[in-house]
Length: 250
Ligand code: 4GY
Image (cartoon, rainbow, N blue to C red; front, side, top):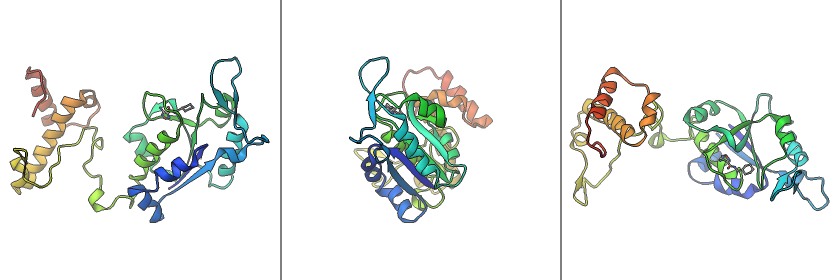
């Protein structure tokens, strides 16, 4: 999978994705991340890429031409079918389902804005898919792009090793993860749940599935509406609802 990030802050992208799991995926040749400097496409003699907004008000606007030319410089050297994404709080909120969908793409071009935004005409011309990483405002799209690239890249086959694999993780079935434990057996008087030491694989699986439901009920009850649940699991939720004792379930 190849990512092309159109940005005024290339070092952010290069630095931010060169480490750990994603950095290894790049070294293995499974991923590439190229930061394309929009400023290299300015036609202004002072290399400016922004100007005052029409209609007044504070803040600068990124000009259409450098953004358009930066996009075309990538578009002209990638295969047809590349996706174009604009990181913006106005987009649909990113989630695991979108990450899974994007993990099937070959080329993803991501446009990062800065200042007060980008001249609307280049957005209207390129018709990018707008994606938000959450309902808050960043100073630029770069952190959003990095979040998206991280979440998508780890789904690309081979990027995670066996130890890091994502068979059981949160959201794969719309539920939160079960709690995890490692050595020592006792920490500050708190012991690892006995079932995990029982060696009874079936009971371990049952316990984990139950913990996922309890965890989701306690922390993100709205997720249960869309989760894939068995009859037994729906019954557990009914029991949790009927048990009226304020706090969290264990
Ligand atoms: N939220 N999700 C986000 C963001 C900053 C002005 C357009 C977000 O993805 N990006 O807040 N981006 C703005 C800053 C130009 C991007």
